[in-house]
Length: 229
Ligand code: MN3
Image (tube, rainbow, N blue to C red):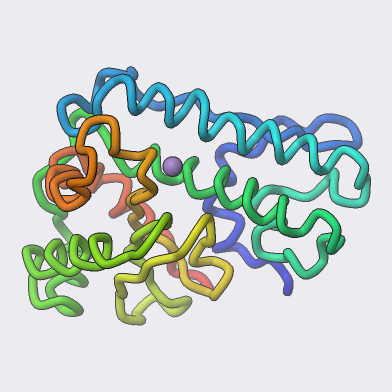
């Protein structure tokens, strides 16, 4: 598979400064304070999630690539979309860690302390067109997240063509929509580590409260710029 432009967009702003001969994958800083998403995501959960969970995927990815110089110039997005070209001996480890890195890097951008409300403009129109309204979209997204068995992610995605329909999908583990040609617009993490300290087994409450911190400006920017392919 040749990586195309839309694939490069997911993590492009986080690609490390080129180091001669090697890309070193790096943990992006959170774009807000650790307590900024209270009470919907508590400080302790956000701190552990970013500084421990996400950080470990980045560390492990760099470590597993150490002995494979042929992969040192590859971006995280490329690795995720071209796993068949990764040596079989490290493929599962690359898959898990690069998926964790890419998914979390996107997830942090989906939220803002000034988020919430409802999208406007073309994105609002597309949600109305494809789901019958914003409330219907939210209900469908929450239902998909609640029904997902085990660890995974719930997404709003679009097809490659700009006028293609929007869809709600889920992925297991650290799989990413790009792996199946979907372009991600919005994502929520429904692994237990994302919510369990505060919500315990009440995943539905986490999913429902999360709308209060969704950064619709960021989602709209993705929607309006993903017109390639
Ligand atoms: Mn997570």
